[in-house]
Length: 363
Image (cartoon, rainbow, N blue to C red):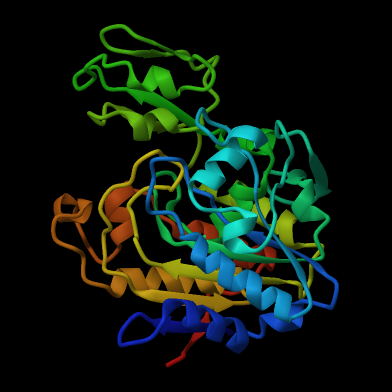
């Protein structure tokens, strides 16, 4: 059983001070030796999205890392899809626009896989699907890492938690392609309006505007951008294999990120602005539950399990997407139809952590 430290958002307490207190209670200082270069994994947010985790939390963690004698930098890897974070230049500009810079967080921002996603280290693993995982070199060569995760829904994995943040997030662009390779979108001809918004966001030009739109699966890379972009919901995921495969590939990449850093990685999950979709889109829907709290742990499996449990125990917000979704107690499955549990079961099988946790509430 792993400890997961938790503080809710009730009462008159600063969320920033809560972050500091959880850093101490989870003993994140123990993972940092004096002089360590410490990667702080964040998601800089796609411009236009406002649900991503605020840089003020990153700044507080930067301060705590410096107190522990570490040398922190903020990082994420480039994206696969068309957008403003698919190369390091645009990625850095986007980060600055969203408030992440040395002036605001007190640490440099480094894109983990370089200018165009080709700066990576191939890590040997013995996964079911992946034998060599390509991880952004900046993170691989860091001495320690702390992941700051905005816990929310996700259209392909049920929820986006710590495993998704470090697994998909820190894989280089070609690794992201491998993880997405089982996703094949299809167009519903009855609801497609031929608006062409999907064409704008497709990174490979796989979509042709017709009536309805047509997707060339020989060109499609399975990034899933079109499924979320479509305003009429006409593009659906047609899984080439079992939906759990993408979850397992993500977990294998998460394993590759942390396997050579035993005792040198800590995890925060921030359960606030719990949007139904990923922060990778240039917009965000209304949150599905009230803000819940912050969690910290040395176990990536336990912290995601605890976070999912807390969201499922919370009251759904009126007017959110859950208002029209069937809720049988599993809010994430109600939103996406995806069973999110395989990622945690597989991570436990690989030895990343355990699903059995002790929730230690910090006042």
